[in-house]
Length: 621
Image (cartoon, rainbow, N blue to C red):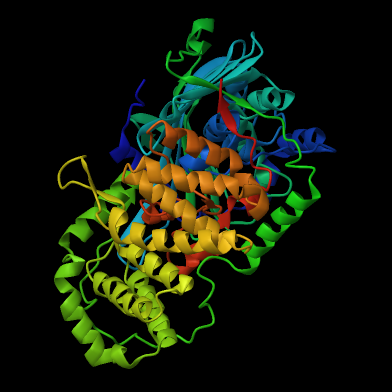
């Protein structure tokens, strides 16, 4: 089933909702008017505790390393966060809408359908783009039979879930992974089913210090609304948020909700989150068959291993500890963190100036962001076509032929920082500085060819400007970038040869070794050189216990099996951080080791640091 859309209307309403000015609220007047309700509320909330749940969004690779059931439930968890478990009864007298009737009607309805839409946006950015991600979930609920959900992320079906009360069973399906999970209902899931739904929002909002709104129209319905600004209405200890507002709109004819919206910004973040619940169908007929999962025959059942200690070997535990400490103490690209960078603010290359007017354009989801990046990159000249001209400018303006190796590296890093400051791959004026960074670091590499850290900086600069693949203009076909099977494979292969020799001579493998060789395996896989890819995977596996990267062992074995059967493989090795999306989409289509601008690098966390026993792997029966 494809979710019906009315995006233009929805966007207009959301825009109006989050830009509406707060009306002045007279609490004393409201209190005098609602003495009965205050007494009821106080009698019901005394001594109660409020539960709430939270589930962060993650990328697909992270989804595959999580419980399917948690991911499928994540679309509805936000409701539970904002509702709590308070009951509400009684009427609210004297309002233009009989709000007590609303609560009573909603409480008595057993079957209904609704859509929940979550929009996260960065707000306007310096380069003129506002990045956003959208998630839509259609929910079918029956107090007797259970619940069915269909979640679409940026327009594509991402998860389905079935909570079957009569069978005491949960089924979660991930179509992109062609897999599913089946498990008995837990007490927590049953509690969440009964408490985490929009019916509770009605009671919670009406318990709060709401302000009545002027009448309006939504989808040609006459509506009356209320709004509140205090997140404590939904839970005792609200997380720190800013610009919080929740609104409820009721059809004045049916006295049933037609629209609920909640908007906030987490403290310390610029990411605006807006949740809209609409397209209600109240008291519709839903039968048991509506909650029976339809699982395609080629989908695989995922199961979960019970967590066990990784090893009882003291030697291996010591190597794991060394690996974790090495990762923290010597993170990737850390060798030149203390380098003194030149001030390049006034530098202009290839006559490209940052003086174009920027219009605020919203890009929704990874496909829009990637296609827009590709439009910019197509307008850039090819690196080899401008390399000589750029080199001469760098000689004239920065005297690069007279710089020491350390000065060349510092200059290359500074040029790369300017590339990101000017918008990276979402800019028409950034490319000269990304290309220049590569030129300067190529010269540093020529002067110090055995310096592994310089090779890492060069790889980072190449990946900044060069993506693994791009969309063909006006089409969906993907065009691969020759840099990856070419110069990048050459550089990582050189590192692997040296790593293998030094480790054979007794050196302990490190986190940087793992990243470099893992990159090489992915590069060989992308080029369909599965023989070479298999060789690198086998080496990584052979060093796992000695080096301490046991947390990745199951994944490496999966990699080995796929390469041995002539299949490609890709995996992420960093968690991008909380609330990383939609910004994180800008940095996709690169090597797993890729870091990006400073603000991204600071929030990246390797999987084995986040969860040393993350090997609760999804395995196929």
